[in-house]
Image (cartoon, rainbow, N blue to C red; front, side, top):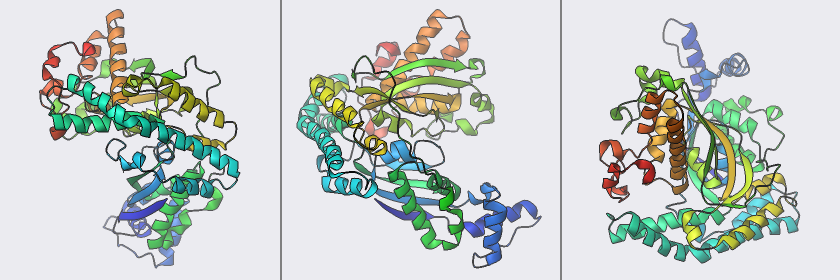
Length: 464
């Protein structure tokens, strides 16, 4: 792994923290004191940091470029448990080299470095699984592109031949990656404030998390060594966490659609339908006083989706999620199903399941395939849900997360049909669960227009 500090607030976090604290207690603008003053460091350490007055230290933020960090250390690591970050991650849809030219030597070195307790046989077992998934991907990707292009031309008649081919390549790669292990490395820009970095470092729950947060900490302390008091090994988490396995095995190993259950809409009477001008191109939902009641109403559900789509879902940081649990299922997307590779998929996934008995739990979790299904509960206030809905009902969205939201819409529509419960507000909610272009008639994606026939707006959405 490599971490490079690419952006920072121009003032040292200790100086800025003291300045912020003084602002609370002085009637005039404070003096910006230097960190060379030991009294400043002692004050920030004892009166602010150890006393828990951390808002004063949240004014300092840092932007890192993370290279060769496994996807599993992001989806089940940096992005898992908190919303206090901003990230832009290398796309599995656009960056084909990630999967087509892997460096298995680097993956081996990564495993040896972070799991030194593993025997040579355990390392080889893990690598054998990683290679098997990549082999399935490589052998099927060309056929998948052809199948996808045929489907694209039927489904999106307004795309040019060139664009249809380019889109087909991206979608085929996106769906075939279900066989790729999430230990594959990626790159990202990750921005956090100082206190979030300290919290991440203290809470790191796996070897990969501990490594990457160590590197982030080292980058900051290289510039601001006087902030080292915030990082105390005695407070660092000693217990590993890994995604749990179900106590009851599922009836089927392969699933072909995401699942939504336990849907509940709370305080629907409070829902206020916003104007489109408040949602695009700038989302002002959480900045509009008249929509503050939408922060009280909630959309609640349980989802069962692939690890790949969980990573997409985490991009909506204002949505709250419970601890994920593996379901024992493997998601096979539509393109892969068209290739008739169910038997390969079952053999591949069973291989990973069986490794659970022989590998350290954190390593077994780290090599989980993109297609491994996880289940967790989601809770979003109406403003957070509206923002998510506008992105995920777009026809250019990733297939599984689009269908997840479509299933949610159909469940709510079914409930409206059979229950006489606040029908007016349920209708308002359903009215927002459509592609954004349904309201405006204009594609918000610009040159990434999906190419579908816009006349379908005249049809009932659930039948499209």
